[in-house]
Length: 299
Image (cartoon, rainbow, N blue to C red):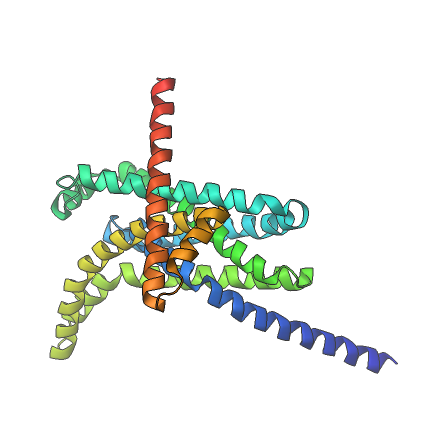
């Protein structure tokens, strides 16, 4: 009797793990688009710090990301169980915030090209005192963790939508697994990206001509890659923010689907992403105007 009970238990566990594996794969596929945005956003968020402080900053943001998910996973489960209608409005608020940050970054870039040139930025970094450098890093980490919170919320929401009909234990295990996998994967890649220039310098010091050649290519590539990631990260803010808002308003979502229908996969994706980009920019601009107006009224 005891033996048959044990076998039954093992069979149940095997079935549960199989279900978790299948749903986990589906969730990973569904969230891969957001992961690309997460990667580009966080890579550009931690740029601009001193070279010897890049990895500590990435580690600081990664710890903040783990904390975000530690808050979001039980919060998402609780909201899904008791007030499921609140998930979409909360995500839309997060999307509006991302769009607002995107507009701020665009305006900052347009108004401060000379101030934000490579030479000027390097000079400012050299002139920072130890205390100022620590404050600068702290500000960078806080900004990246705030952005990560919105993206993590969307990843958790997407995953929760896939596993909502599963038993509670399966939901918890899949959400926790995706959260850990996403954080380790994204910040592992971000750490590699920000240290490409150091790898290039190390290879240049080797005796092999091949190593020196690869090192020179990496040193040339690194600053250009960071500039590209800065642009891609800002665009991703509008795409993610606008996409969340568009999905939260059925009329807009169906209108975009209608526009994209009947076209090839690439054109359809271009129309859909272009619409999300425009929506994100418009909403971000409205939020920025509201924030500025509120600031003036308070003053």
